[in-house]
Length: 93
Image (tube, rainbow, N blue to C red; front, side, top):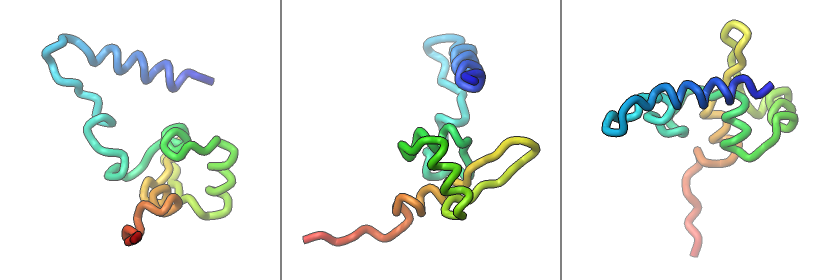
């Protein structure tokens, strides 16, 4: 089931037309924390969690998702909250 990754690699390779031309991949332009959604695979990569654990957290309501058609997208803000990146920095002395 590596079809998505293979397609992504092909798409990225196809985007590179000339060395002096800027890369046009929209995922590369927006920092992850500013994105609205990501795929389950991207959420696994960003958090370092496996798919099983991620789906467990989705089932428990700790991670929010939305479904558009048959595609499940993870709300990035819920991932940031999960790992504590939305909280104010702790002052350590």
